[in-house]
Length: 81
Image (tube, rainbow, N blue to C red; front, side, top):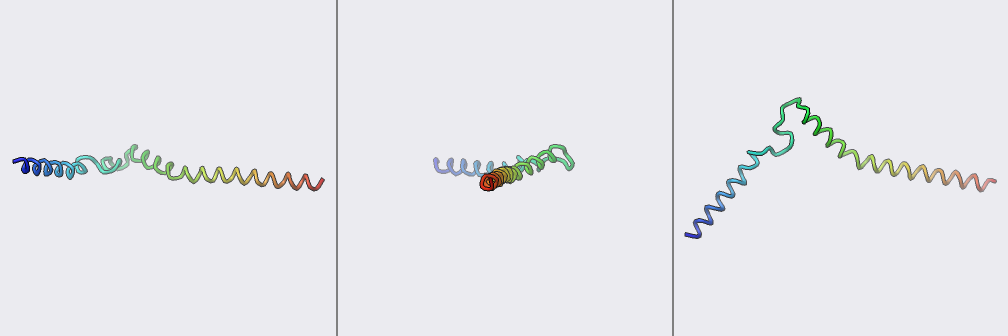
């Protein structure tokens, strides 16, 4: 008797897990209509999140390069005097 209860519970749990993706949209934009503002906002935010590490790296690299060039210029001026 206990074994059949476990089998039923596992079967019901499996059915619920299998039905959940159909009940809830798998992604944030699947339930939105075409041309919806929320869809555009979601896409834009994803693009910003993808670009931000590259922008940060470029900014840090650019600042480092400018300080490097500035120090070389100072060294040249101090040795020529």
